[in-house]
Image 1: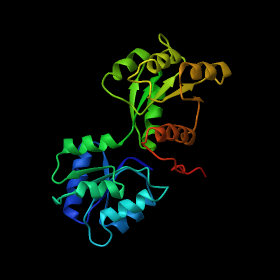
Image 2: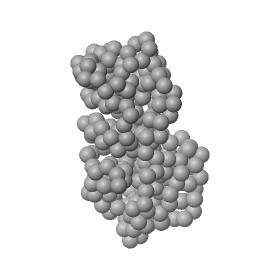
Image 3: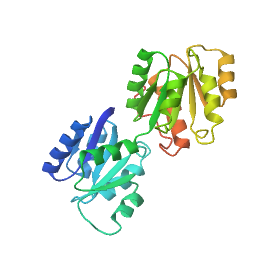
Image 4: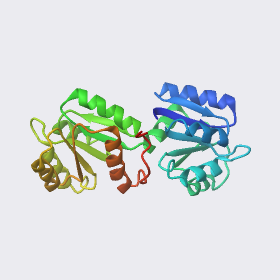
Amino acid sequence: MGPDKILVVDDQPEFLELLALQLGLIGWEAISAGSGREALEKLRDFRPAVVLLDMWMPGMSGLELARLLKNDPHYRSIPILAFSASVIDGERQQCLEAGCDDYISKPFTNQELEERILRLIPKILVVDDQPEFLELLALQLGFIGCQAIFAGSAREALEKLKDVRPAVVLLDVRMPGMSGPELARLLKNDPDRRSIPIFALSAFAMDKDRQQCLEAGCDDYISKPFTIQELEERVLRLLSRKGFAPQHESSIDKS
């Protein structure tokens, strides 16, 4: 697994070095592959958050590699950001038709690269009043390719929602002040936010907690503690409804 790793595929060693430097400056580790075949070998050992893929390479082109990945249930949910130095008309459309999720032209700045990468990674708003649990969830969500945004209370969550629209809200049921179900009702009664899936979390395995959450509009419910496999399966199920990640076999070794 590689929650902070990006697979960069390009046949020009000097550009691979430049991209590794750019990605390092914005907080990502680059894993380099000089060809489509080498990229497939690397993907056997780790799952990147994003694949940065040159379109025009000798042997297997970027377009061919993108089609292979998007037709494979183990890899199709990994976002692909295509790049190219050419200015061929319709190139962006070619990339999208091959299954790439976005396209950027060389040269690009660090800021442009960071914005495009983060656009491809689902943002999850985690609302919980326990800082240590927030840290644990950040690690777990990173391993399934998501970016965690934190709020220590329902009020803080409402402030965060003014600036960001998450793909999913992970919501603790029992918090001081405004409870999780109260926040869920507010969101589900807001026409601008009611379509955001809400995943309720509780340390109490009580039927009334689950029923209360579902009645408040939550889309799913899980009791703490849970394994990373359980979190992955449940979160990806909600993300698939929003078009972020198709259903696929778990990327985490359960053996």
